[in-house]
Length: 482
Image: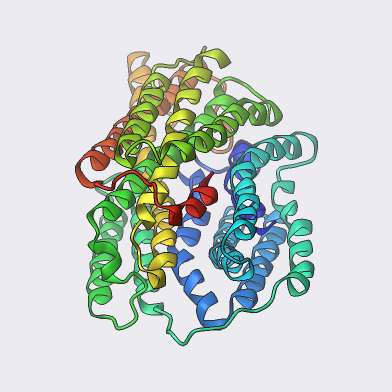
């Protein structure tokens, strides 16, 4: 149930974005922060959240994480300003970063290895896979028949049931005496957050802005300081030994780049379907449903293929198929029909389904038991951080091309410029040349996403070297993903 609301929240808000933008007059450049605030907090603190469970008690931190998540969800439903809703999204991310890794740890400590734990992992995986599909449908239903505020309120009753059942159903495992790496976590999270802010600021102003330059310079300093600190730290949040495996590093790089492409795809596509194609939130939720269902289906098939085919082959083919779908998506026009986008979406779903199972197995293959939690959490972290950075870059590119298209049209017709993609307040104006320009910006974003996905394939070919995953010790890990 905890995993359901954490995964659900990653997709349910995408459907509500146009309505939230209209309520608070979000510009297109700033709208990404509703997604990025959650992703940055979740990805930046995921490793620390898992470590906190080991140090202070898994059950205790699990309940704290769920409590923070539902409290911030409740407050988010009453948001009255842009700052309010972005802040509550960040708090949701912090709650999720505490609850998600401790939930998985509690399963491994509560259930004995073998069929009992496999069944528990199967239930956990079903929530992971189904949560995204449920989020898309619920987002459409709640936004259409109630209000976008219910995409936040829906987490509260589920979370309260979790808090009530946890002391009854779960025993507190033993703690360990390791320490938390607060400084490393601060440096990493602050550096990446400021980097995303600098990239986003460039989208709404310019690359030559002093604020943009200072932000990017400060981000570079913090990230380099983080790397240096982790090397000399006695209790690093990312042990250097975890990063000494070439194939594992390749897995992280693939997830980083693929996360960048997929976050951008969902962000642009959710807006295109509603703002350009004119779909209602409910219809949009159903439009996305084949994506989630096909990912789950293909991932299930792939979990059976990893014993027959080398992971590198699947991890290479998957991103290439994703890139093909994204390239086809870059060819759409404002008059596109659902059938025009359905085939590219299905290709992307197949590619994602082929990639995620072997990618996760490669990331945790041959990891010492004491580092298994860090290795798997780091894969999720790279996905979230890659998504945040990618989204900031892609929105900057999209708005740049949109504004250029608008300026060219207005100059050719001797009209004073009153439109700027980065500064649209609320929904996109239903003016033909603006809709054309926005679509052009979206398609340039899809095209860049396609090249990023190809980069993931190149990383897989050059770095990943693991053999077929036939070890019986890996059967359980396949179940986690399946």
